[in-house]
Image (cartoon, rainbow over all chains, first blue to last red):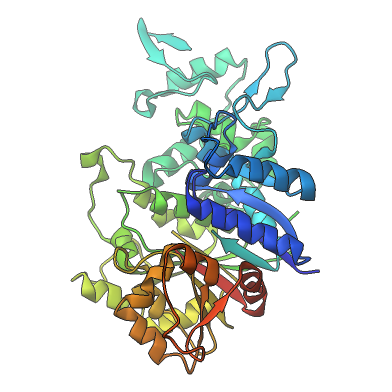
Length: 128
Length: 110
Length: 122
Length: 101
């Protein structure tokens, strides 16, 4: 099976992100294994749990959540790019566990090493 | 977190890293280490000074692999191994040595 | 974990300070290099401004990440290529702030880029 | 080794198309998508069309139609319109992908 990794650098309100979502979904439906999406630069903003897009506009966040749920698509956000943009996790004082306070559950905080790993495994890497 | 050194207040971040790397000196490094209940030996100092001069030259704290590669030229094979460095700094040489060298905490993803 | 080595091109097309592209590309290059991937840096278009000597980012309160370029040897960055035509168009010489930069003609530059498995552009 | 070039910006406002053209080799594939569709009427388009014997040139149909970009006058031998699914196929029929955005 052909494998694909995608790097997304555009924010949730951009139509370029819509293109990325379309592309990924077409790939999955074509039987290509999308092994992960890595969000870098402004792409990490897609993961904010505080996103609120007007109802009559394209709901990129709902699409990411759907892709994650329906196809088990891993959505990695670069932790450093996230922290620079106010997205982070915290250690819960009571439980000692990490909580992704303002990051949508569909996304995982990852290091850049994750991108290296995806790149080493995927047949193709596409930056969108 | 605020350290008091010679009656002066020195700012650090949540994890105890200096906010301004220029304020660093060896006594301050000792003070930061004491707060962590960590004792600095001459072997530690060798690495701390090396990491600091790497930062001053290249404006970045070296990741472990780059650190060992750079140390090899100066200290030889034995001290330039990640095993040796982890023995000295069990929490990770990149994370811990930079702290006592007064440098910013390395980016989490590196 | 990392099961194979890939040849990676990081193509820099943006001037160093107005956007974070240069710094973000550098972070990628360092991490790919640290994981022993076969990593090369390409500079073309306004990206060549990242190699110009004697810049003073401190004057505009910007961290001088260009200084980190001198540490490439410790990160196993294999090749640094720059496009000669891009230098010419901008009246720049091949006197860079780091050594070991290979200046290539447009067609050599394109051929090197074509020899890489993964190309990321900033 | 062939490259799939994704042109996502208009050459009326960015240098990306020009830079892309300098990195095109025989058998490469070039796709106009997003604002890259506007390049249909850019002077640089001629350079791409001149290369049409050595490369394949495509435009993502929905992206062009969304922008009222009309490519009917251009011969199918020079420019093919494709769907997103066909773009995915091109990703795998080339050795690598560069995004010019």
